[in-house]
Amino acid sequence: MVVDQLSDAELDRLFQAFADTTRRDIMRRVAVGEYSVSGLAALYAMSFAAVQKHVAVLERASLVTKEKRGREQIVRGNHDGLEKARRLLDEYEAIWRQRVARIADILAEE
Amino acid sequence: MVVDQLSDAELDRLFQAFADTTRRDIMRRVAVGEYSVSGLAALYAMSFAAVQKHVAVLERASLVTKEKRGREQIVRGNHDGLEKARRLLDEYEAIWRQRVARIADILAEE
DNA sequence: CTGATCTACAACCATTTGGTTGTAGGATAT
DNA sequence: ATATCCTACAACCAAATGGTTGTAGATCAG
Image (cartoon, rainbow over all chains, first blue to last red):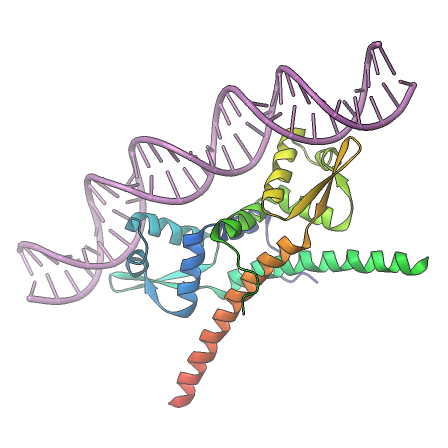
């Protein structure tokens, strides 16, 4: 039973978000600790605006959330987004296994 | 222990490959049955060349393989590629869980 | 109040992406 | 031998991506 239907566009955004080294690194960071946008920006050899854009991509993909704290914007990992991506790959895995099982059945019939 | 180290570029290609609805659909198809490139092309409302490009993206990402059979090119799903993507997301999941566990520990100490 | 910090956003640029059409070559069928 | 089918690849185009700099609005510190 599929509880939580994801649109194609949502999945596009999800995987697109993972398809960049800097963004995957940001995901690792915010999964462990708290970072402001400028705190993240300090970690990479690119402009603040570039990092800001990466965070925006992750946010649109529901992989992080931002929360205003004073003049800072705290970036937090969003577990749901990660789970959705994982679930899709698990689904593919299941399809694969079904196929392997079916082939085994066919071989067993002979 | 990380058995099989994936370069950033490989991961970029892997997730980039998943970040398109048509390509995810192709992945589902070839996981179940056998398709030639033209067989796949017949399924979508776009040119043969466009589908050919999508297959090429999946191939560069090690998500499918092609095998020549007569004048056709048979596209097959490659389980390894899928596994690698799954493993990465599992790793993120593990990082997440560690954090949750650590927070629980801190709360328990008080 | 002033200055420094953090953020957002616009404008711009080069490259990549996702699509097209067209051309050409190898394999198959008649 | 000829026509058909399947594939590969080049050239082109519009839009998106990943980066830049610059401007401007909030918030905080002195």
